[in-house]
Length: 332
Image 1 (cartoon, one colour):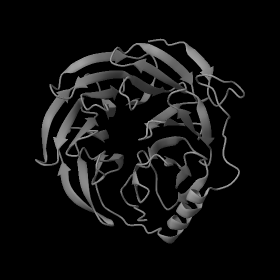
Image 2: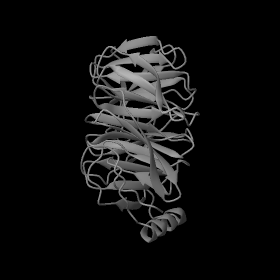
Image 3: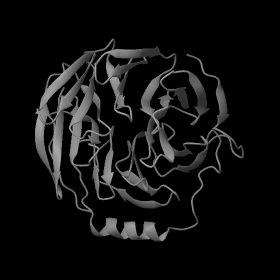
Image 4: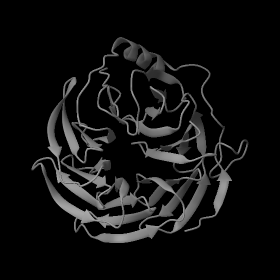
């Protein structure tokens, strides 16, 4: 599906309109009172704890919508769920059934008991933490690598290694639509209003489709290299993308204008997470740290160190973060 690109993002200095930068890499002249307060909180409560989760590397982590449970998916073909109790995670259960690596998972947007896993075994599985059993297995055409649940809870989208995205009815567990793309699809997401579908691709672009029609709306040249990940803030004001150019760009949802960039990382940005109130943005790469920034100014709260590597990051509130291996959990 070829979508004609529009004006550039961070590389189009001085332009205005959809897909432009206004202005590029803008940050405030100094830290706000909110930033100073949070910096002090981070400095005073920078404890770390290790929580063994899997027998092999973890590919994905995600918090339930109520923030009480953290799920992880692993190369060991399993998913795990932890329950947050005060300042510690307690392992609740392991979920087995996949025949290959669990590459990504996500929770139902409003039901804290349901989550779905995508695997290289050409299936997705829906799990209910109340029964600890798989309540549905859906066969797909390829090895699945990314998955998301629509904000209205009615549809699950799953992408595979052949750049095919399949839309599955969450109630009947049947395929509703299927799209083959002619570019490398990296990550997929609905907007918060559930009427647009976003894809990041290997050409540095953000492709936007109408939903449910799945008609091309726009293609934004967001980065000069591979656009890897995308995340929408809970307030619906911004979305962020991470790229192989080590930049995180922040975009206005309504105007599709890049309002600022975060450039403190040195390696490709693999994962992003907003805080529950949309005030903070965490980004992680192949660097051994996480950058945490104030969304409205770009100022850094802190950089969390001693982490090994990342392919997934989850931020529950300004108080709790989790790493790839679930081995480092600063408690603030």
